[in-house]
Image (cartoon, rainbow, N blue to C red):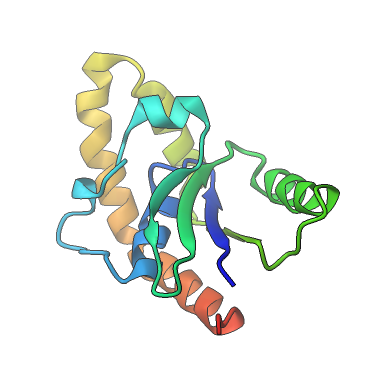
Amino acid sequence: MIMNVIFLGTLGIYHPLIAAYEYLGQLKTDDISNLKFWGDRISEARGDPLLVGYDQQGNGVYSLGAGVDVIMTQKSIEQMVKIFDRSEKDLIVQTVFIKRERILLFLHRAGQIKAINRLVTPLVKYLLNQELIVIQQQVENFRNKVRFD
């Protein structure tokens, strides 16, 4: 059965994106800023789920940003699945949390000013590199919780 997996966080272009690549086994930690969609403000502003790729079972793997209401967004998506008479096996939403989420959100907003963005980008990369182990652990926990046959 083919389904979709969404990694959800405050900003879909950062930690959920890292989680999606880790889940797919495609995360290269030498330079996380080279990931497709990394820091893509236009994609983030559209609010669409970002298709990162497909896992070995053919499941679509996405990254999505929700702003500060991550839990409410997760619940809303899960309720929409039920409303449209779909199974929870059609779509799994996995939240990704890091300690520095508020700082990341602040930096993202500050980075809308182009002159500041040049300073923000390496700082965001540094902060997320400090969170890599936590993100990887969350993905491993997700893998252990959900096994696809």
